[in-house]
Length: 302
Image (cartoon, rainbow, N blue to C red; front, side, top):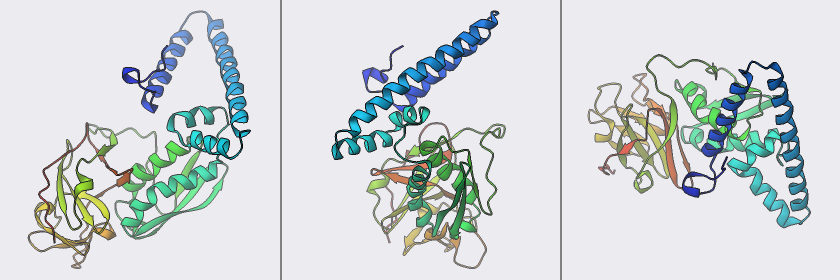
């Protein structure tokens, strides 16, 4: 079985997941054999192979760390690599503790939460279960559960697959194994092409297989909302954005920095979508198949 990635490139997380799925399929086929001894023999073989490679990885890390400061930097880089991290966690060799990785995961999504006037803090980590608290506008935002499910859950699961679970004060989290509603499609992070070119005060419509979105840029921060005014149903990308206030053509105003709250006392609220920027690439989370197709930059600049 080759561990090369697509077209001979280095393997990605998706490539390794594919190999892992293949292993699970082979194990299931062996378990289905009539001979009950086959399953026990397979289990023993797998445990022996894992122990063999675990001892090898431990020895590699020991040699690298022995190289001094340069070796420590290499170990740190290995621990942050999405592919290598999985192997280190399997064998209990990750250089960072569970709590340290949890803090890194929270730091990853804080820019999004802070851009909506909120934040998240770790209250305690006990028995590998984390208790979190939303603060600021995120605490009362009606889309908090969606934000947590898509942003926090993904960041935590990527950095801390060994975490037994996490709870958020005052927010009912969807069960990770809950069956999706009939007719729904999986949520995923989608790249928004052209978002980095959006000027301050600009609005950009984004057509997706799911809901139409509008990307807003207030100062240096990007935001994603459903492209519909809840008061008049007009497309928001036809409006204007000034000092963080998004106004539709009918004059209804919403604060994009406070999760789309109405500033006119109407009790209305835009529908925000988690948007994260990493390495200059903007990604938005939504229920859709395939990636969004950004429309030409018809930005309304204040």
